[in-house]
Image: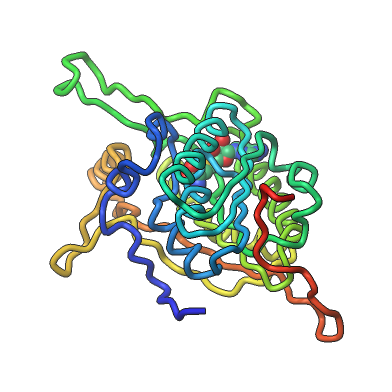
Length: 298
Ligand SMILES: C[S@@+](CC[C@H](N)C(=O)[O-])C[C@H]1O[C@@H](n2cnc3c(N)ncnc32)[C@H](O)[C@@H]1O
């Protein structure tokens, strides 16, 4: 396995540029997509061609597309019909473009992950790559009065759905409880020694920092996974030796408002990347599971 620095340069170009001609129209409507370069970096670092990657909260399928393009096979689960449909279209497009991997998308509730994923895959996943949903305050696209000619700021594409049971819409405690359950089931699906990579951003509620990454670390431990690394994936570019931030409209607004009131907030320009492993089998037992599984053949 190649060595990899803990700082991931995953935004050399904007996410829009990273997706251009690689994802189907409509993809941009999802409010919280993973940067494609981040998914690709994780997949390259923690898997080999032919390996199996799972995203239990797959959205429009960034993990699946990047896996296919890198010759890995992928399984995705998504709760919302709209995003599951786009994930399927994006995966099909990646295969059509010449990606040598394959992917299957399951539409359903990741809280029932082990019943959704066929038993043939249990214990055979090499990498789980995912990110939990979280509140909508920093998501979405906007148009100012100057741009639209209408009073007020127009905001759109800032919701996962209107479904109150989507994990994005439950309380923080419920989200963490459900996420711990999902990670516990991921452990069953992983091969011994397999890797889990979770990306998470801290955010703020009424000015207070909500440390989601630390909560994810605790969730992984409770799920019986072993934490092995904590990395930083840049959401800012680097140009001429300087960081080029890419904040959202709402991030900028919130930080400016806070600073005006004397609260020294910074614009968050990174994702925390939490890396775990499923404990390997004890030395006297044998791992006989074959590597390299094509979901379409099971
Ligand atoms: C942070 S987004 C993932 C985005 C994805 N990485 C991408 O790039 O498109 C989390 C996703 O989890 C989905 N979700 C929420 N609750 C879920 C559940 N119970 N089961 C499966 N998916 C769920 C949301 O609809 C959302 O699309």
